Image (cartoon, rainbow, N blue to C red; front, side):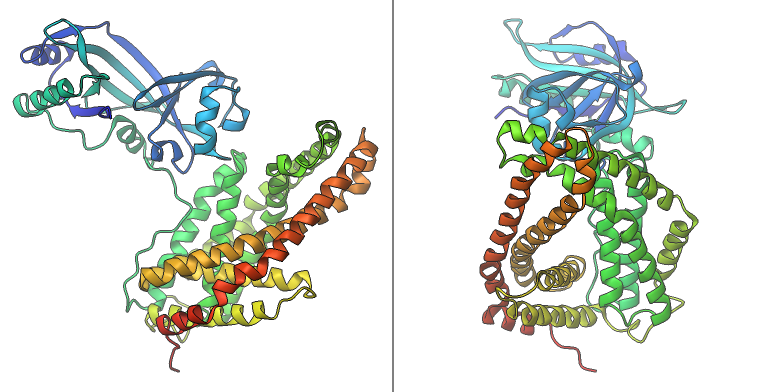
Length: 517
């Protein structure tokens, strides 16, 4: 396996000529042509490219169009011409190597500008006795550009391996480190540039990471979790308003839903009236954001919807897609108005006020250990799910499965947010069986929501140009949705069985003790 490139720090006092002279004392060099690079580095909001070991860049200007280049260790750069756009979705890129590589990494997330870099670059080649290049070096002096400011970064030397010359690469690194005293860079250039402009190199995660110790007061634990969730919500508002990709709204909604679950399940931590007010405002936010999310799910699943149809019938459904897109545009306008409203700001302020270590509106459980409170709630929610799920049969109404799904979400949030307080060997398998059950319940509910939405659109669709043909094509698509719902319902019993098995119930009883009152 070819070694990955290494970045070493150069003494800031050395100019380019002095750096070359220093290197030439120990290495046989071929000096290339110096150049200036000006590029914008891109990633998804949650840092998916960086996590996958990729880097994407494009030149500034041209109203954000130009050539998009994707770098990956051990592979030649991949390039594609892109149209001017404020963000790039893999699904909208021209077909080819770049789109194929980014599809699986980005999924529905967009590439957005993260930082602009201006660099003075000098390539060098380390030569062996046959005058062949066995290692590539690059001297780079860069600055991050933020608005009108230029922020100098530490000068560095990149050491890049050449295929087939691993020994020479190792020897060169040894010389640079041991004989010339060059230290490894603590951060690569991308990370340093992002931090220089106040960003997060790894992006913004949608999952709250709140380490909690057993014995922590429930008020402090709830404050830490609610504060983290409020931060995630606020971080996703700008991307939702700008409509950069569908995941901003999704992650905002999940954070709000998790906060509602915390307030519901830790109901004794805060004074009842104040807690009810915040829960009510969070429910309002869920209602505000729901229509756009439902339409996003419909449009993201378009290929699945038309998959059962022959190509000519699938094409006849295009008026429906146009109708969904126009409805989404209208709902997005309403959503933007709500997110910019005084009520939304006040809801966030009330949320933040509740997320304090010493809540002003404290409840009777504020001083109880969080592991005691969480264990009791996990046990109770699991027991209720077992009871309700065991009562579901072929004649049960759809609402019974939907209610079980909502309860399952709350249990999963409890395990995700507070599971670190308990044995991983208990929590992880429990989360897995719950996720398997939730997948089936989610498929059933998503099919119901999608079917209802499409049926509600039939009159409006009939009035569209090409609407009558679209209505005819819609029939088989709806039939396929109904069949998918039935498949999910048929699978329910198999997925529910391990979740409700006697040994699983006993494990929950032993691992999450009932609270003594």
